[in-house]
Length: 216
Image 1: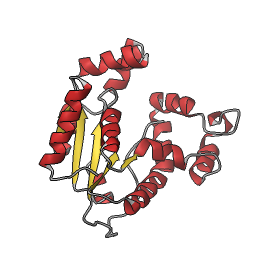
Image 2: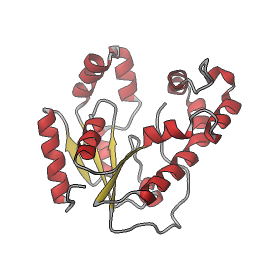
Image 3: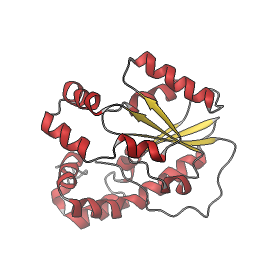
Image 4: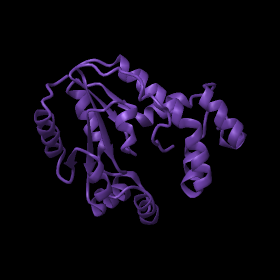
């Protein structure tokens, strides 16, 4: 199920400390997970909005009940959990369903991200927000926003070769997201990921140094 921007208004809260708060954006196939894996290996806390979305929609949670009430039992797997693959397929093809999903889940996701940020410690905490938008800066009191980018051809190849997408499905999903130009316009730093894993790690290390952040 796709993550989206929070609808919770937390701009009146003052929970910024010495720890930097940095959003990490990136489209499908860009390698954002490889970056967060490296950050975790370096000792930094990472809050993944997709993981939070799974947590707040776990069976029996308020967001799960709201989704069941809004969409019916068709969105549930046989064990009663949310059928995430089915929901993702529905909202990918139905804008109205996506809006309903967002209205139900955004507030829950935003509140949980704020809670985890408030409990984090260290030189920096990273928030993986695939669909980062400018309003996240105020909502989460972010210091910076980074984006992991690759060219469309690279993203297409990775989706087909590494994740088993058909060319048609990969093309549709890439077309349904923000362009690299749009992402570059709203972030502070870009990390290109078209080389090896070692190349990517070196670029992340460089970004940390330039931001004045020591390893967690």
